[in-house]
Length: 166
Image (tube, rainbow, N blue to C red; front, top):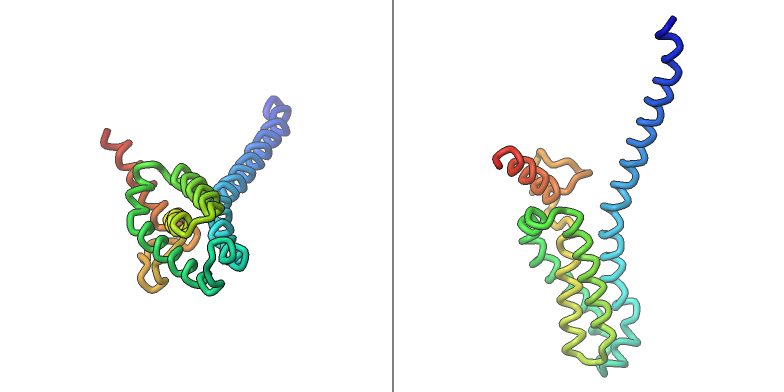
């Protein structure tokens, strides 16, 4: 009889706990996707405004193609040291540092000088690289899942290892 009285309350607690877990998973998804989305949008602003930027800098509009190429060169370069950066800073700090870097690059793009535009392009590219997956699917580790990027997985393993061995 005593167990019957407490059973509905326990069910309510279990349902509330499940609801909190689901909300936590949604928050994790938003927090991990937001930096990638914002950085991708930041990298595509200058090509959209290519005519206005080219007029301000005194260049031809065809330079927009060069901009995209330079952004992806920066992304490839920065993705080569992403794992060590994530290990050192952690995945969220790295992601939000990339957002801040992309924003700074976009602000620098507003300076009407070709050298500033070139530096801004490099900063945007370097900020874009850690948040993109540049490894071809057939070259990825078979143990990596499609939902978790290998660099984040590496950072998580290194943090677990350091906790165990400290």
